[in-house]
Image 1: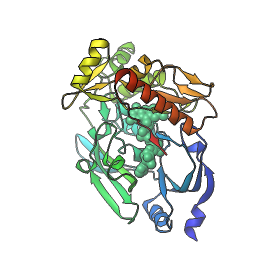
Image 2: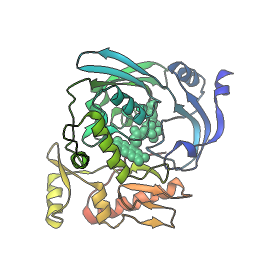
Image 3: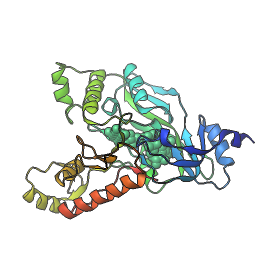
Image 4: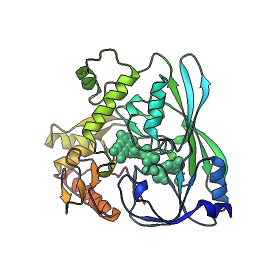
Length: 342
Ligand SMILES: Cc1cc2nc3c(=O)[nH]c(=O)nc-3n(C[C@H](O)[C@H](O)[C@H](O)COP(=O)(O)OP(=O)(O)OC[C@H]3O[C@@H](n4cnc5c(N)ncnc54)[C@H](O)[C@@H]3O)c2cc1C
């Protein structure tokens, strides 16, 4: 039957996750259109489903008993075009950075600060990806997703997605219910609203003697900064920031500030303060620690847990639990994982 021709059995997921962890999927299939996806869903019997994009925000801790579906829907479509803005729709299986570069080539602004984030377009609204002061909710227009149990295609606008800091409705009340197939973004065509105030972007532009940057200049600066700070998953297995930056009530922050006058902090809504998880982990003494030379905490970036070689996912998960407990003990701050655990 058609569906069984599309399936592979007992498939290693090592090539499909940036942590480079070996686990196996009982069944594995790729789809490149909504039609082939709905066909797969119709015939999947009762198999549990897991959707895979670029595998750059996942820690696999065990084999998956069920069907792993890899989204390979590609393509770009202009939905609306005005003199100042454009709405462009991308297939969820498209590589995120290639999409950003295509937009920059067409002089569409809004995504330049999000250059070089690994993964695919489809996962970008899942956790409202963000970097250098921009989140995708700032340019998000809509997404189309297939409901797993009914096979129906449904459109979600920004107001439907409950975006928050590395959060959306798809990680909460609608978790594991929808497969995102296309995502549309509203981008600027001229008078781009550049955001260079965050991180080291301004310093990088200055270093390059650029005083009137284009979106391409900002993208190049972001790429250079990221390459100097973050481990390349092609060289060292990792999933980027393993933890979210914690947001704590102002009272708790005031106590920490008395003890640590240099603690990095950023204002957050509702009388709260955002702290830097990397700073807390480093202060707690974890930065650069390795276990058996196989895995550990990255030497330049304490937020990133790394797999040097032959690590199993459970070991990384155990390490993250130790870090969470230690940071809680030393600072009374609870870290939350950003990476999805399976
Ligand atoms: C070196 C490095 C740097 C990073 N830097 C950043 C950063 O600056 N900012 C940031 O926000 N993130 C960052 N990340 C994390 C990661 O790149 C993003 O979370 C990215 O959006 C994950 O995309 P993916 O396609 O790899 O998702 P996957 O890891 O494949 O999947 C992530 C989750 O989304 C679900 N999912 C994936 N695709 C779909 C779909 N089409 N429909 C429904 N569910 C889906 C999966 O089931 C899973 O639960 C970084 C990662 C690495 C390795």
